[in-house]
Image 1: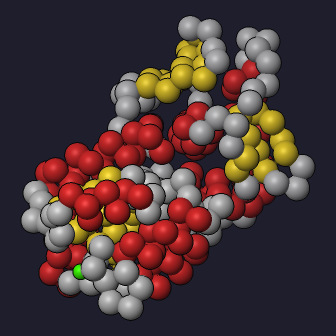
Image 2: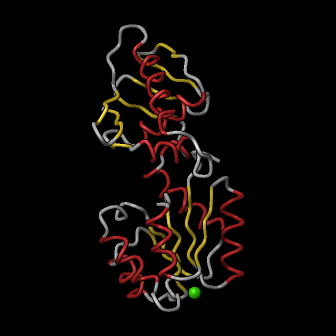
Length: 228
Ligand code: CA
């Protein structure tokens, strides 16, 4: 599905990995899994997830090392990492957080607790997937009602333009490449010509400008599009 948050689960024990993947999918998110640290690092670079659930004890490259490398990477540093660990000592927890992990859960944990922590991280990076509304300047998206307003007036947007605007409003100022917008709005498994993005951004602009409003979308030469 396009637009659903993507969660990477890194866990070497098959049974635990499956339970996690199953429950996270049931929550309506997309899931990819890795059983080793090096595999996780490759996956993150190929298809950056929105959140990573990372086991501490992994063969070869440990979860701590994976986290450290991700947090040093320019492209990957902002991806939240929830660290899972069988260790319960306070010093380990501190060490886990010092490597840059955004949250830390001690095994055994309840799935409900993990999902709650996942939502907390998603609220930061993908607010549209957990919140009720998004605001940017004079534009407001009512996510529950699937409606868009500008200066209080409802705008008419097609479903693709709605998803595009949601992506833009989740990260104002971010420059999106056409490729990134295709992944987010159309989905990672669908082949769509990148010119299709231009067409829909054009339609979105037209809808946003209706009623003599300014154009909030910026074309960034050679890079893509940004809101604001
Ligand atoms: Ca493990």
